[in-house]
Length: 310
Image (tube, rainbow, N blue to C red):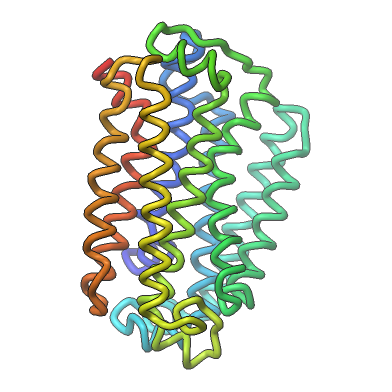
């Protein structure tokens, strides 16, 4: 059981679920007080199906990445060692079929086929990435980042199709909402998810350079070299830092300073990440990857901060 959870990356799945719940919590707490903090059965279904499809994507990625993983992370190869390739494929099919059946039920409830079509396209995109896209380098990284950004947008589409069209119900965020619209958080989170996962995918390519060379991958680290890749990562992190700083400066007068506390923490972590990108050891690169994951967790925790400290 532990091997299975490690193969589907249970911690990453938890983050996916928390991202969607963050969107629900934001809506229930700041936009529509008629909603319970506990998700409706339909929204829980959306969380469940998204997790199933992501788990399937992680599994099929490991299946096609088997030879490279034996070099890059030999102690964390689960398929063929603890789970047979036949079992992995069978579980992959079951996860996706389960997700599609659950999504079809959701579509019947909401009287739209949008989520079914989205799920089918995402399943195909994840398979294509695992089969060939990972070797393509930046295009594959871009695809994964786009799929990650889709997660908060699924919540936005859900509220639209469920005919939940709330307006700001608290003074705390009224200034931001008037300036950017009631749906600003979903868009902010999607951009945030895209940017940091794009950076993290490039960082993972830097970690996996030895195994990727064996499978003829065209990752950025292989194409331009490790030094230039680190420089590009610093530029992307600095760009993220600049965006968040500008966002704070432009909106200081609109909300209480407590609104910016989690953003300030992210800025501090970003500065740490930028100045520690100077080592070639995998241990340091793994620490950088965990730091980026922590930054993303802080990003999806915004509504909880605002609820308890506003």
